[in-house]
Image (tube, rainbow, N blue to C red; front, side, top):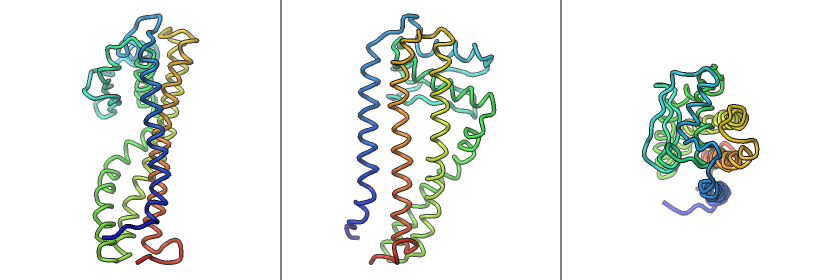
Length: 231
């Protein structure tokens, strides 16, 4: 194998953006994790109130290990919150919990983009693993056809990353609107909680940009773009 400067050209921007987004998210979460909401609701209680206020009462809320490992599982209608969110009364915790509750609302209301993302999960898992096998074999054997197969498989990951953007943006928009409307936080506190969600959204943007840039690189190495393959 050899070092390809072209790889660095395409990988570096996404990596830098991902690092910036990750640092910004952690800093913003840490800042507002020290600020308690005036209602003294925990993240779990905030999510429960937001869902109940919208008539959604069949979602289970439970704690899961990990830092910012919060997610909603539409298969089991389970909202899983990390320890820093589940039992904390901070604006950071409430913002994240309400965001995940936003996904539960999307599911309950048949939000099309969420359904599309959920449907893409199996193909994305297969494509993510399979793409690297074909790409690495293709580069090792200098066989652009294998690289192209890998790029096609990897394109599913790119589509998944792009579809994720409206899903995450909409969940945050619901959380921002409903956390104040439901009396979970005051309108002034809502603005600070929203900063956590805005920072977190940038991580999804970084992921989508990274995936798109890497797809372009693989297509160039396969000879589809850029006037032919590079040996």
